[in-house]
Image (cartoon, rainbow, N blue to C red; front, side, top):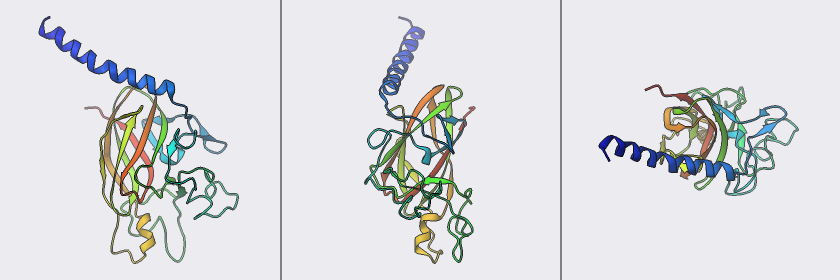
Length: 233
């Protein structure tokens, strides 16, 4: 066997198991893309913003794992008043809330300690604990490498990771704390928003993929979205 043929064989050997693993995961996965009458439904699109609060349907240990079955945002922090944002996914274990603007006397998510001001009424996953995870089904326009910016808050710093089709694709990703001792309101440490530029880079196949976001250490984060863009070099 000449060197060129040997090299091709090595490349094929390294690609086939990964592809086979991905197809096996996707064929066995029971979760479904999120849908409701307001949002619509279907896999979230890449390139584009993948919103964490629109994690998959399927429940505990299928679409997500949460430390307890109560949503500590919808129906607890946020009043049960019949509105979409306050009751969003109220009966699911993943904790969800949304960015609140123009609150007086103390601004919440449009506060002067933001590194970046998020959109108003943006749904997010919060109250995170180590060991928790959630799945998001996405539809990728073209196979290739993608980088993602990450909109978040982190009261004490943390690490997360992202799987693609059941396989770790990033390793531990360090999340910089957004804690600012200059803020006189202790509760607002959970509302200092930041955008981590190109936090992760992953290779994705065209079509359906399932991303799993893991909270590895510390928790105490709000996760809004990953904004995926193709890497051209």
